Image 1 (cartoon, rainbow, N blue to C red):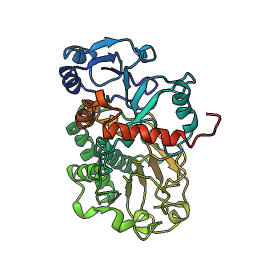
Image 2: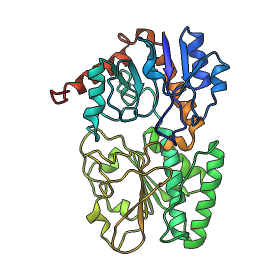
Image 3: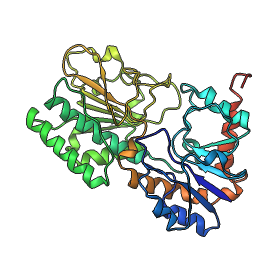
Image 4: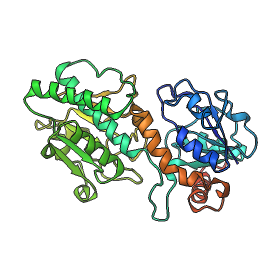
Length: 367
């Protein structure tokens, strides 16, 4: 069986990779043939893949891959019209009625291809087999704290662009500096409220706060028990930073909304919506409508009074730490990749195919 690792073309700041040289070697040792597109942005050099036996091919060559080749990537494909005929493994962001989902699924229907969405690969207990959640939460909390300090020391100026770090230690150095700068100006360390604290993402956010020197008593860790009564929650508005780490599947009461921000008790100045459900109609943080990027990490929220409030909603936060995030994700995915030769009968992959057909069935008949 052949796998074709595509470049994340169209996602200039996406440096992560679904396969790493380590997991590629394991696949080749197991009898797979692995093609790797050259990529100017991937954190791993092509030479690293070639050294373990992969065949390097030109960027964006996957549409011409032989029939039966499985195409693997991370983010959604660029918006184009041609039908998709291969089996694709990726995060497609089209199962929650996100903007344009009909067109995305329609391409698979027209080409008789198959989408095996990484977001919905689950085991017999319904738990995702691989996810970037930990590093998403870790990176999101890091940027939130940096933005908190930036707004204190540079009022009226948006948080500047960010770029990937070589490793976690380098990031922690910068976040500790931000905590010190904000604390020097205000006389206090930030208070942080994390919702979804028991999941992978929330644990990443909490670990970042701990490693950055935010005192434990300043970090509120909420999960289902604390949110069961339904929001909006005054505790969020009265914290400096809110990090939303939930995995959204259905409509729930808003955690915060515009009316809840209109209070003299508001301390909230930074929201990091790690979930990044910007266009999801169920988004429980409906105070913004624009996704943000590494180039423009924040979007302002129009509020009454001080402090200024901004939102971070970047859908590729783990790319702040692309090497470590890729290694962790790909290692978790590897046992299931090794079973791709029987993907139609393997419970994890067959479940993903079944879900695709269920979602296709909801499309307008014209699709």
